[in-house]
Length: 79
Image (tube, rainbow, N blue to C red):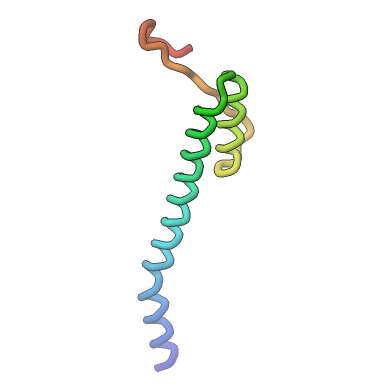
């Protein structure tokens, strides 16, 4: 009976653990968005801005390469 009780406890707590993990992921994504926002308002030089955004992404997503494309609405193209 003891094992059954422990198993039911694990099953009951499983959604809570999943919810906690989702909350942690959401918090990290929001932190990244805040870092990118801060970079946007504090870096006027495009190269510095790109480096700050890439560094912020690197804390969350391991990557070897990144690129940035800007959309020119007047020309309707990426520059």
